[in-house]
Amino acid sequence: MPPEFLGRVFGSLYGAIGVAAALSYLGGALLLDLTTAPVVFIAAGAGGLIATLATAWSLHRVLSTAGT
Image (cartoon, rainbow, N blue to C red; front, side, top):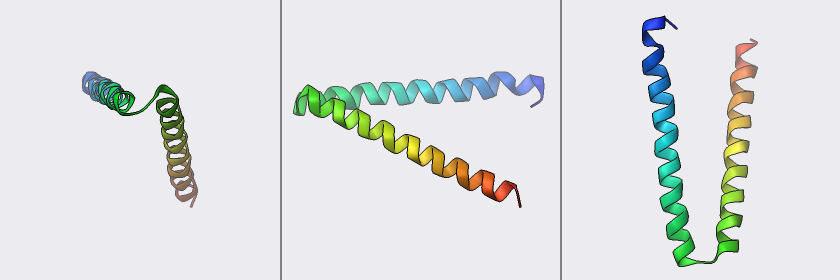
């Protein structure tokens, strides 16, 4: 990455992380208003597990095609 573009890359990355955090706070608050705390914890755990599995699957695909 050319040094003059590093600020744009980090801004894009951390900007997206900030937006995702804000959306998760809003979604969690709405879910908590509609249900109970245990339901929110289970939903958050399931969402984290799904995100981890999707990342592992994507990484496996990329690494398996990069070797060929």
